Image (cartoon, rainbow, N blue to C red):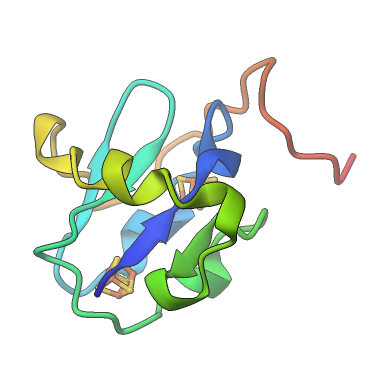
Amino acid sequence: MAYIIDDTCVDCKYTYCAAVCPVQAFHEGPNQLFIHPDTCIDCGACVPECPIEAIHSELDLPLSMEHCVATNAQASLFPVIETSKEPLRGPNCKDNRG
Ligand code: SF4
Ligand code: F3S
């Protein structure tokens, strides 16, 4: 089991999550972050850090986001990110909080 970042992260990439992970499980792709499933220790610390609720326990993943298990499994293709940085918040970021 691992925690999963869903598509809500795409083009938003706030990166607050990466700074709290005790085991450096986050990897940075061009438009979103991924959680490496073999590194994540299921602590849950990253969940409240995401302002748009893009992180879920694999056990609670919405059905519509089940494909994200496979995309997070590709995390090792990208470099580890251990700190927060300026959010991407691009034009396709589905953050509707205004
Ligand atoms: Fe890291 Fe814990 Fe989030 Fe897994 S659940 S990615 S170990 S902060
Ligand atoms: Fe993405 Fe939320 Fe982290 S938008 S980068 S999962 S803080």
